[in-house]
Image (cartoon, rainbow, N blue to C red; front, side, top):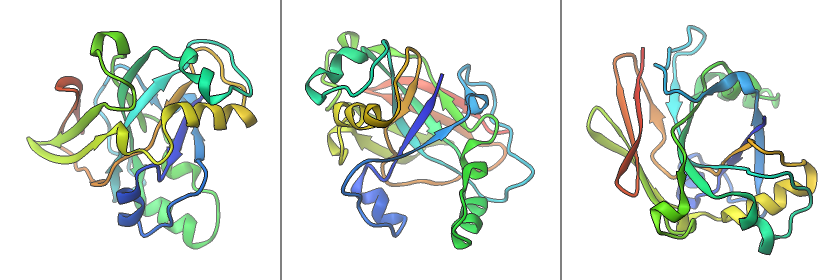
Length: 204
C-alpha cells in the first residue's frame, strides 16, 4: 500500500506558502507506517515545535493500473474520505533551506490520518464538486471544494500512473486548500465532507 500526496493543488494554498503554482502535478510519498486509519489520537512528536494540519480529500484506488488515460481514471475509484497530512513545518523548513529531502517532516509515524471512506453514489455528487472543512476547537480553519483543484482527481491518477503502478488500496491525498496552520496538545479536530463528520481527532 502506497500513500501518495499531491502538493500545491489549490492556488490559494500555493500563495499562502509563497510557492509558485505548478504547471503539472507534484507529489511525494509517505511510508505506510505514517498511516493512522482508525483516528487514534495524534501524539505530538517530540522532535518538532511546529506541527501543522493540512486537510485533504483522499481517494482509494480499487484496481491495478498503469498508464491510465484520464477518461478511464474514474474506473479506478468509487469512494472518498477526508485525511490530514500532518507536517512538521519547522523540520521541513530546515531541510528546504539546505536543499535536502524533507521526508522526515511529512512521513513520521501517524502523520497520515484518514477517516472512513464514503461511496460517491451515496454522496450523490461528482467527485469534482465536494465541499469539506476542518474545525479546531469549534473554529473553522480550512474550507475547500474539489472544484477548486488545479488538477482534478482523474488528471492526478493519470499523471501518477505514468510513473508509478497503482495498486488496490493505494491512497492519494489530493492536496490541501488554504488555511493550514499549527496544532497544539489538547486540540480537538473535526473534519466534515458535504456536512458529514468523517474526522474526529484529539491532539495528545
